[in-house]
Image: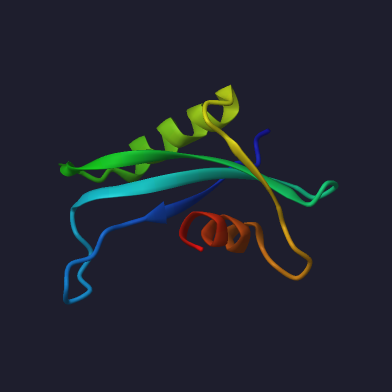
Length: 90
């Protein structure tokens, strides 16, 4: 369970500039044998400054404790990140 990886998602303004507040961190584990990805996320309120370290800590904790985790198959030729992005933002 030490192979937790992360995706950081940030909000942008109309010009494409990354905003300092809000965002999400998704922690995930990929099971090579079953070709599945298990993930959970931590969300930062749009009124709070995004903190990458806190996002990692919270999302990792949620994932390892099994709080609202999702499990997805990873299609052949796709990455775990592709599977998560297609599931969340499809």
